Image 1 (cartoon, helix red, strand yellow):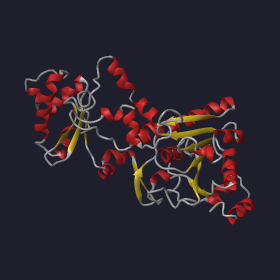
Image 2 (cartoon, rainbow, N blue to C red):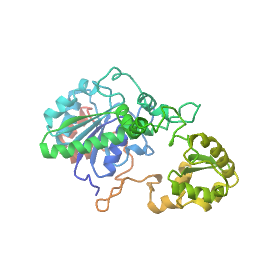
Image 3 (cartoon, rainbow, N blue to C red):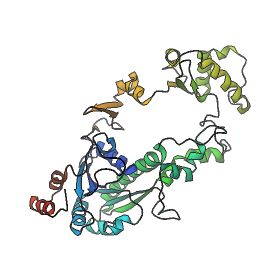
Image 4 (cartoon, rainbow, N blue to C red):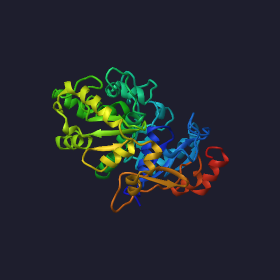
Length: 380
């Protein structure tokens, strides 16, 4: 059983960061019931299936939340919950009669987790958006890419999942811990623009100290240097370097043969383009596998750039069981790891309404009430 075993959370059905947050908490043992809409066959333009891995480890019930009886079902579940996850635009849950005021009346200890892009207030709060927009407004997107080139969106990892799902998961757990002491719940306002900005904290400090320029591709960690870079190999594949510290850089020079050359100082920005060109030449003389033989596992701070499927087969990842096969699908394993209360995938991705009767019964709703709701078309 995971470290969150015994905690109960209601998840209002949505896409992206909300489901990611729920998956993380469910993998860690929380009992999560997802509320899917009665009329929704899937996830908007993304049909729900056993391949929808963000839906794993929890159960789904399908409820007509537009009806009074359906809202009452959700509120009865909220009465028993430690936390709630919702990812609608500001005001939607209130219009459904399921906003924080109604929920906390039913359950004063509830931690009400809200996930939005822009936050619950502000000039842009009610505007539509996606990860790329949130990281653009927070200064993240401008910083990612090469000098003189267009900013590069880092998939939707920074806004949806890093600045969104992870911050909401942290907020919920912190709120639940505090509620155990105070006996009082509260609302957690998680905005992806806030979380993405928070992830940039170190760079604000570097900039304040004169060690980071507000430009793209000219700094230590943004491909500005030759020793923190990606290089192409002879077979058209790529390797990564992170030889920042002097002792690691020294080993890089030794293993590439550059220690025999008269080179300018490592930290002289004027020399970075020259040294980058030299390393580009050197790395193209061997295949990626040949460079692995020379550098992998050393203190160069080196790793091959693997494709998604290559990553699942690398010896280090297979030893760590970083990826697992569950019900025929290879996927990332739960993280982080615990020495005593092991996290695990609880079940395959849930389909909308798949566990309606089972989950409602386990959460204390009587069979007679379930039958009445089903006959009335409130649940499915």
